Amino acid sequence: MSSPIKKFLIFDKLWKIIIFLIFSAIIIGSALFSIIYAITNFGNLLQIPIIAISVIIILLYALIYFRLYRKKGKIITAILSVLLCLLLTIPNSITFLTIYGKNAMLQSNNIHTIPPDVDAFIDENGIVSYNGKNYIYNENITTILFMGVDKNNIDKTYKNGKNGQADAIYAVTIDTQTGETTVISISRDTMTDIKIYSGEGNYIRTEKRQLCLAYAYGDGKEMSCESTIWSLSNVLCGVPINTYMAIDLNAVRVLNDAVGGVKVPAYNSNMTKKTGKMITLRGNAVYNYIRSRNIDKTDSNAHRMTRQIDYLKAFSTKAIEQTKKNISTPVDLYNKVNKYSVSTLSVDKITFLTSVFLNGNMHIEFKNIEGKIGVEGNYAAFYPDNQKLYELVLDVFYKEI
Image (cartoon, rainbow, N blue to C red; front, side, top):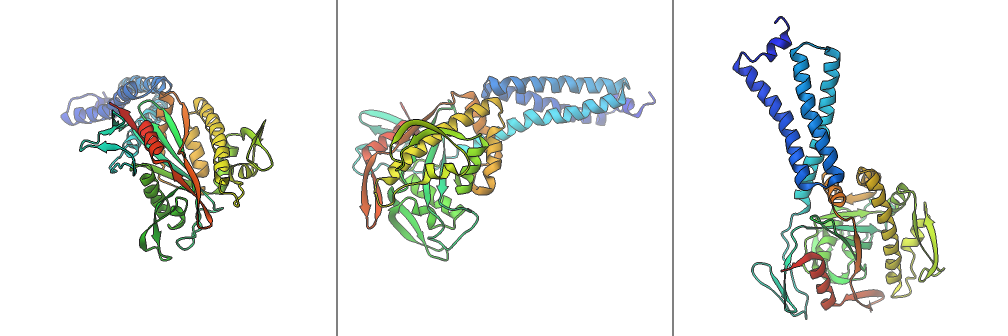
C-alpha cells in the first residue's frame, strides 16, 4: 500500500468517499443524462452515436479506476484519462447546446391580431375561431427572419434612413417537433407600418411605407433588424419572430461557393421567363440571378422573388444533402458568413436546429403572400389580400383543435 494513488483510492476516510462520489456523479451522471436526452429527443442519426459514446465513457471511467487501483501502465492510464475527457465533451456539448438553443428558439410573448375585414375571433385563451373551425397557436413553431440587404459591407453604417434596404425578406418557420419547415417569401414592397427614426437615431413616429425601408431607417445593424422584425410581425398578424439574420451581398457568393455552386433554372435575357435549361451558379454569377430587375416596371420584384425561390430551393436541397453526410455543415456555413452578417443565430441555436432537421423529415415547403401590386408615389407597392394572408398564418403557425 505504498503507492499514494492506491492509498487515495482505498476509501478509509469520509473525504475520499465524498471526492469519489463527486467525480462519479459528474462523469457517470452527465453520460447518463446524455443517454436519456438522446433517447427522448434525438432521432437515430444523433441518438445512436451519442448513446454509444456515453456508454464508452462509463466503461472507460471504470477501467481507469481499476488501472489506477492496481498500479497498471501509468502512461496508458494517462492516455485513457485524456481520451475520457475528450469523449466526455462530445455528448455533453451536443446535449447542452441543444437544450439552450431550444429555450432560446421557442420564446413567445407576442400579441396575435386579426387583419381588418377578416371575420375571425380570438378568445382570452388564444383560441381562434374562423370559418367554423377553432385553432390554437403551435408552441413548437420557431421563426427565423432572413434578410438580404443591398449593401456590399454590412458593417459600414450611415445615418438613419440610408443604411441599405432589405431587398430579400423570408420568414423561415420550423415545427421543432416534426422538422416540417415552411419558407414564406415576403415582398419588399409590402405596405405596412414601419418605425421612422431621425438621422441621430431618435424614434419619431410610425408611417405606412414599404417593408424594405424598415431596415433602412435603423442603424444598419441590430436596430435595423429589430425594426424589420417589428414590422414583419405586424404583417404576419403578430406571430413571434424568434431569430434574425441579415446578410450583405458578399455573403451570398460565400454561401453559394461553400456548397460547390448551385444548379438553377435558366431565365431569358430579361430574367422574366424560364428557358427550360439549367445553369450552375458560381462566384459573382449568383448576383445577377437573385438581384436583377427592371425598376421601371412595378412587377419586377415579383419576377425577382420567383428566381430567388428557385435559388433557395436548389441551395437548401444541396445544403441538406451535405448536412446528412456531415452534421457540422450548418455550423460551417454560419462561420463562413458570420463576418458578412448581423444575426442572433448562435452555435446553440444552430445545434438545436440541426438536431430538429436530422430528426424530422427535412421537407421544406415554399409559400408566398398573395395580394395586388400598385403604386405609392413613384414606387411600387404590394397590398396583401388580408383574407388569404390570415389563412396562410393559420395554416403555418396554428393547429386546428
